[in-house]
Structure formats: C-alpha cells, structure tokens
Length: 405
View 1 (cartoon, helix red, strand yellow):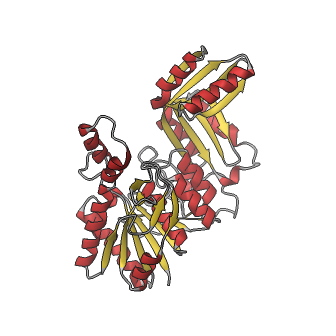
View 2 (spheres, rainbow, N blue to C red):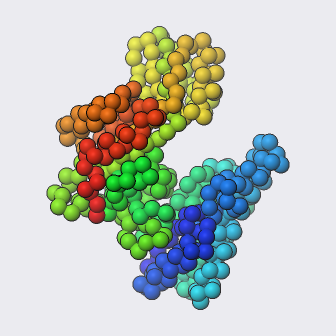
C-alpha cells in the first residue's frame, strides 16, 4: 500500500477555490494508485473567524491569562472545522472521507497543553481506513495525552503532525501544500527575482526554516531527517512539482553536480542587540543562567574580555534587561535590527563567500553589526530598515535569480 500524506495550510483552506484545489490534489493521488492521508491546519490567518490566533483572542476576551486544557480545547477547534469542511468537499466529489481529531488518529503526546511533543502514534485505525480506501482527514496541531486531554503542538504543529504521521505509516512522500510554489531562494515579496528550488537537502531546508523561511516548521524537518521521510513543498494552486527535500539534492540545470554554493537568503526581523559589560567568568556564567531561567533564548553570541554581545527577539527585551539589571550588569541595547542569512550546503570549505557577502552589503552602504557562521550558513546582523536592499543585493551577488529547477 503506497501511502502519501498531504498537508494543506490554512490559507489553502480558507476559501472554496482553495478547498476545490486541495480536493483535486487528493483525487490525483488516488488516481496514481496512492492512498492519501490528509492533514489540515485551521482556516485562514489572524482575523479569519476560525484561525488559531482568532480563537486565542476570543479566549483572552473572557480570561486575561487563559491556560491549560480549556485553552488547548478551544485552540484545537480551528483544525476540527477545517477537517470537517474538507471532508464534506471530498464527499461532494464522491470520495469517501472521514474527519479525525488528533486523538482519534492515535496521536499521543506529552502532558503539556501547549508546545506538547508527540510521544507515539497508534496507527491501527488509520491503517484500517486506508486499507478500506477511505481518506482520513486528520486535524494537525493537536493530539491527546495519556489521560485523554486535548493538547496542542505549538506553532507549525500541523507540519509536525504531517511528517510524524508520514514516518509512522512509512509513507512514500509527505506533501506540504502552501501558497508559494516551493522553497524559494528568498522571500518573493521582497526579492521579485526569487526562484523556486527543485531539490534541497534536509540540512539546507532545516537551516532556512530556522533562519526565517516559513514554508515548513524546523521540528517537522528534524523528524523527516531522522526517519528519512521525503518531503515535497508545493503550491495548492499549481500543478508544479515544487521542491523535493531529501538526503540528496540535484544541481540546477547547467550546474556541475555538487557545486551549488548557495541555496537561498533568509531574514528575521524584530531583533535587539545587547552588549553586557561583564568582567569575571563567575558573573558571566550567572548571567547566562539567569537569562535561561527567564526563558530568554539568545543568538549571534560574541564573547570578548570585559563584554558579551548577543541578540534576542524584541519581545524578550524587557525581561532580558530586567534580568541583567538585577545582576547589576551594565548594558547597552540596540533596537530595530534584523538578521540576514546566506545558506548553502556547498559553501563548506569554499574561500571567498564572506568576501562576496561583505562586498555586496558594502556596495549598498549597509553596515554589518555582528556576524555568526556554521559550515552551511553565514548570518549578518543589520538594521531592519536595510533588509530589503540587503536581500536583493545578496541575491544578485550569488546569481540566485539564474538558479531554478
């Protein structure tokens, strides 16, 4: 039995046209002889009546700080509605479908009602439905704990659901349907010349997801990498192959195999940079411990004698400054910053990559405030107002507009 998992995002399901396109993709999979299992997100984005953020806002109107099972129960409603409506769309086309909550699909999680982790998948019910040629339409983003309480998986939880089900059922492919044609070389809303990648490795897409690309959640990629589940990122509204993500990737047309240096440019806005003046190692350790206990995750860390420089999200600035003040650490804060990251599995050991980045940004008069790198990415901290020019300059510098396939 060839099982394929098809996940449809909220923007794809928000209108009748998107749901019809989703139904067409499901029918095509069946016509190819595959047994599709469908995973859905809540319809639309914030402001839409059934979107998760809208439901959270509704909860806060009734209770200032909603927590626990009641909030998770409400947050799960958006996916329940999507599953039922898409199942009806399929039934109207003569396809026998059955909407299932995460619990009905056998998804067992840890006890947290928010940000829960999947512990196991009891797949017997799903296999029975698939063997009977029915289409399970499973709610993403949710499961149940051992006590049967509704839990949610956090942001991007529907991607996690889809890939976890693909791994458990040994699916031949997990398709992630979204409103773009695949994994792009940059944000097409900012870089008009951005292109869709035909193939990418797990490590490349994981870095891109972690550094700002929003086509798939990093946790989903980690599961796919661990279990070797191939992923295709496709547009709901097109019939193109999209981006195939696996252990291997093919070169662009005309490119020598294995010599694609750069796959894409990503960005993250809304950062602040903190310079903490710390003279002794004991206080340094105490500072990082206090920040961790305050749930402050830091990035782009540079340690120098007498001072430590790092970045964090704007929303964590207040708690971070308060924590450092309590330790009597003198701090300087720079705001309205962003991180741009150049990513490519082919850059490892290749000289001149940093030179090209520095030259491209210098040519636009964009100061680099801080850097960090690994064997497949280089990040630069810049002012938020320069992001658009930086992305376009870097995209041109590495000729990414010519790379499609």
